[in-house]
Length: 348
Ligand SMILES: Cc1cc2nc3c(=O)[nH]c(=O)nc-3n(C[C@H](O)[C@H](O)[C@H](O)COP(=O)(O)OP(=O)(O)OC[C@H]3O[C@@H](n4cnc5c(N)ncnc54)[C@H](O)[C@@H]3O)c2cc1C
Image (cartoon, rainbow, N blue to C red; front, side, top):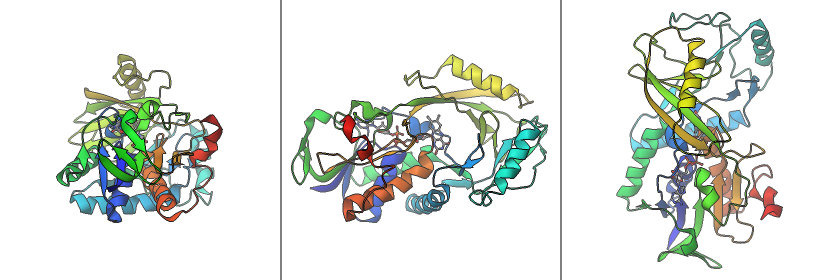
């Protein structure tokens, strides 16, 4: 008997497994590499919505918690994962500058937005209306974190690299059984793979495909993330992630020529030096209609749980909803209505 089976090891599964580790709970993870959202993510943590200059949902609370969690994972895996750097928002015109200054005065944003206009010093970029600077932002090296955490789990014989077969799950009153393994609880965290899960696929997951191109440029020499209509995120070694696209029609996992073209077109508006596209990646973000995650326990089967719907902000939301779900399962703490899957009970 293990305490938990965890199905899916992206940002959601990783956060929850890390919580189990901290609480000395036993677990078995199933991971089949069918979804790429976390593996291709830009890894940015950014407390501000840069389209409208508003705070992201529960930004302060989530940021503080997430930093503690990722620092804890850095020491566990003995590898640096967090890079702190500002995000520089390119202004399109004077009107945007004014909106930024208005936002700087709002109590929920003063900590995160610098009220100084940042003049561009980088000759590779065309920034006529200057930058606004977002503080307390940065990047988590998600692919390294997932790879090393999976190796760690494997070294404990707690990883099964195969597809979870839902029709083999037997749900009893006080435990579940799967292929001869008994567990007190099972957590489903399959990202967009949720659509194959007969217990939870009544939840209205939408899915939004995102693609990045990876460029190499010797001349760009950028140490901060720059946000215009797209992000440029420094990766080191003169490599940068550029993107991402948002597409809620195409739900295929493949990279596309149209995304590459569209990203290069947007980039050409403000990047003035030579570069080479060296790679392209795609993944489906698990997005929801009301922009709130799917957290909670199955309305009928009390040992089946879910973390999903992290949308485009899995880095900050993952650790936060993990805390909430764990407290709900282990301590009976009531989940907030806005994240609880009970809000969709009637759809079941
Ligand atoms: C292009 C792009 C850029 C992004 N950039 C950022 C960013 O900069 N910052 C940020 O915070 N967020 C970003 N996101 C969003 C973030 O990546 C998501 O919120 C996050 O990946 C969701 O994590 P998840 O664990 O729920 O899903 P996933 O990462 O999809 O993980 C689900 C896992 O479950 C596995 N699985 C599914 N079904 C089964 C099964 N039956 N059996 C076994 N295993 C299974 C899959 O293989 C997968 O590993 C980005 C997303 C994309 C696509």
